Structures are given as structure tokens and as C-alpha cells.
Amino acid sequence: MIKSIKDTKNEELMVSTLKSEGCFIVENFIQGEPLNALREEVLNLCKKSPPYEFGKLYRGKPLSSYKKESAIYKTFHQEWMINLTKAYTHQPYGKSVIATHDYIHTKNWARQGWLHSDKQKSFKFFLYLTDIDKTCGALHLSSGSIKEASELNKKLKSKGLYESHRRLEETFPDLVKKYPPQPVEKPAGTLIVFDSDTFHK
Image 1 (tube, rainbow, N blue to C red):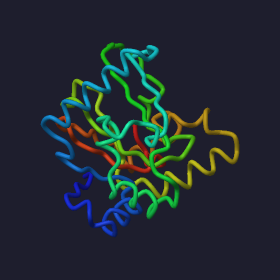
Image 2 (image 1 turned 90 degrees about the vertical axis):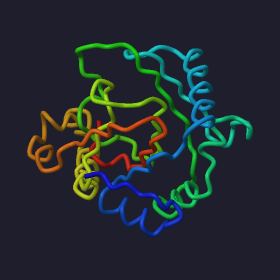
Image 3 (image 1 turned 135 degrees about the vertical axis):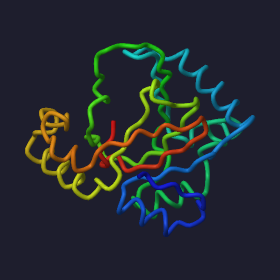
Image 4 (image 1 turned 180 degrees about the vertical axis):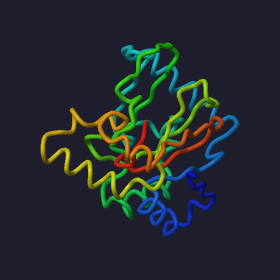
């Protein structure tokens, strides 16, 4: 079960949850007009972005480069997010903004469709802009995998085996069985916070 945290002022709880579980959810993080404004802004950016196999992919600049009146800045420039990033990673917050508009269906698994840890470790604030159910390709997370996943990721990268072994369903089925991925099927406005070493797809 992926833990849901309501009190984003409780930094100690969030950090301890990340260290033990690798992820948590903030339900109803954004709703109403702020959500509508953010969705519209992101869709416009995606329209101007190059296509990828499932739709459009927007790769933005650091959060600090956005205008303060933009919906993206207003949504993500949160004191608790900045402080949590520093407390958990000791790294600066808001390195990049990325969005996808997925609307193309295919039977092929994309690179991100396999359970994996990211090659480049990062700390993510992942926000749903539409309602997500089993038909939508929900984000899946293996809660509790963080410690073993981090050790495996370091080992694979040090031996140059990351690319050949990143598809965990093929290379480490026992780990997939030990840490079964759980779909995050939640409504628009749900925020998922996770360490990218956590097994996910």
C-alpha cells in the first residue's frame, strides 16, 4: 500500500516515509480553477512540443525560469516542496519541468513501461492533470523497494549493466515478486512524491 500523507508541514514524517517506502501520495493537492489553469497551460506547452510515441512530450527549463504568474510556477513553487527536497536529497529544488500528453494507444511497451529505477537518480513531484484509472496507463510504484532498488541500481551502473538489465520483469523477476508494483489510480490533482530509485513504471 502506497502511503497517503495529508500534513505536508510534517517534514519529519515525509522524510522518514521516503527513506523507508521511497514514495508517498498527497491526495487533492490541487483542485478547481488552479487545476484547470495548470492543465490548460501544460496542454498548450505540449501542443508546441515535439511528438513522442504516445503523444506529446514537453521538456521545460528549471522552475525558477518560469514567470511567477504562470500556473506551473504557482503550483510547484511551494515552500514545503523546496524544504523537503533539501532535507531528503541535500540538492536544489526544481531542476526541470517535464510533462506528457499521452493519447496514442499501442500494444508495444515503451521504455518506461517496464519496471525499473532511473539511470539518473532524481527526486520527483509527479502530478496527475486528468483522472487516472486502469485504462490510462497509471504510474505504478513498488512501495518499500527503495533500499534494495538503490543498491541494485548502483551495482548495475558500476558494472555497465544498467541498459541490459533495466527491465526488471525480465532480469530480476524475484524482485518484482517481492516488491509488486501498485497502480496509482487516482483523480486529477493527485500528487505523487517519489525517489526515482524506487522501482516504478
